[in-house]
Length: 213
Image (cartoon, rainbow, N blue to C red; front, side):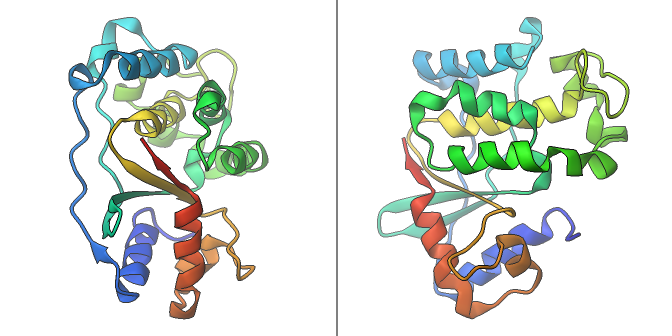
C-alpha cells in the first residue's frame, strides 16, 4: 500500500508535469463566517453522524489536498484514499443527495464495496478512534464493532469530508483511488506507477468530477 500523502504528491507531480500550475489552497473558512444555510447543512451532517451538540462550534476540518490555477479559476482537488469509504461517509452523501455532487454515485458504491477491506488496517488504535474524534462523536465501540458509536475517527473523517462538500465559493473536484480511468487502469495503479501518457485521462476525470458552488 502506498503511504498516505505519497499518492497526493504523485498526483501533483503528474499534473504539474503536464503543465498545470499548482496554486496555494485557501484556508477553510470558520464556521461562524459561513452563510446561515451552509451552517445549517453542516449541522445536519453532524447530527446524522451523532455528533455531540456541545462541541459543534469547535469543528476544525483539515486543509485541502491540492489546488491548481485554471482558466476558470482556482480548482481545489481532494484525493480520497481507501479510509474515506465506509457507512458514515455514505450517510453524509445520502444527506446531500439534493446537491447533485458529481462524485456521489461512485462514492456511494465504493462505500458499500470497500468498507470491509478497511478493518484489518483501519479498525484498531488511533485509526479507529482518538481523543479528538471521541470528543465529537462519543466513546468508541470495540475495534471492528459498528454497534453503538462504532468508530469515532471514521465518523469524524466522514463529517469533515461532508463539510468540504458544501462550502461556498469554490470549485472542487473529488477523485478516488478506486476510480477507473478511461485507460482501464485504476487511479490507485497509476499513482503507484505514474505514467505521463495517462495524464489526459486524469484531467478528464477531474473535469467530470468538478462541482462549482
